[in-house]
Image 1 (cartoon, rainbow, N blue to C red):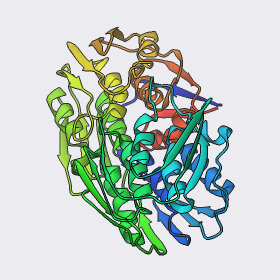
Image 2 (image 1 turned 180 degrees about the horizontal axis):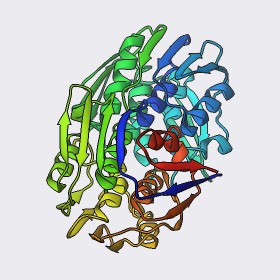
Image 3 (image 1 turned 135 degrees about the vertical axis):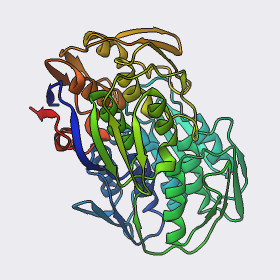
Image 4 (image 1 turned 30 degrees about the vertical axis):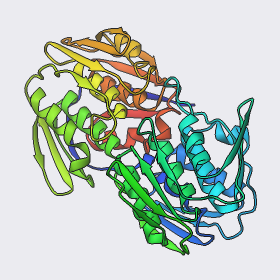
Length: 416
């Protein structure tokens, strides 16, 4: 489990590099099943969700090596089409293996996934999409069994631009005869990264980043080497930390267009931001102004994963900031812990009103989920006194040793 001990009140200064994207590498790891060969993945973050994905790959028969930040997967001897319940429960993204294993073998059995408890996140869109491609699916007491004698391309219209359902459909469609079109597809950058990986593998996938993705299936796939894109949510977290704690921080290995909404919000709040081709410098010396209404939306809107760190920042902005959470109904679980640190936050349904306070104070708090845990870390870094953050296994799901990264910038954060 572990605890983070944070002695707050220090301004930040220094340079930090962003790790590979969690939400990109997980579907890419699932996609390594498709080529029956070797996949080499660079810039893979060493986080517990990656460990969970590798555990699944090894269970079904892959040979996996993880050295430094490079993962090598040999999927030539995969024989197992079943993923047990205890492995599925370790992370939400485990459901992405459904489309990949189905594509490889024409059958798969698994269970509904676990991960952060952020409210209802049903897999109905995943299931209905695979049915459109010819899969027969049975559900019973959390178990999901999929089979297909012949997967056939079709038009798949998503009622909501779900990232996971878009990715699962792409993976399954690589084994379809004919053409598949995903209409109202999710547009997140991580899907574009998955497309690039598949194209390097020999698949015919196009349109990622737009609302329609086209897959021409049954292409011969081969060995592949790929570098995972930078994690835009980690970049946003570091930006919020710099703005909240004050000082000057240079963030390297980013793709600025992926976090443009965060740039504009922080500039309006009073930060000075200098953007480079693959970097940004965030400087804050004076007070911060309240953030105008932030609504979480599918990309290119403001990401729900960046809402908790931004709320931590809003706790010390002058005035009242408003958040409207449109993606998950339990995304405000960090708010009550911020209140324990002296924040003034009122929540009603989807709306959170954050009234800025002069000071936050060290306290004992618990991380309830990944991004909420990161919000508590940066709030503790800006607070007066010592904080203890428990349940940090949630944070480890998406951040490579967050305490080491923050210490590079001058924060006093240690793990016990």
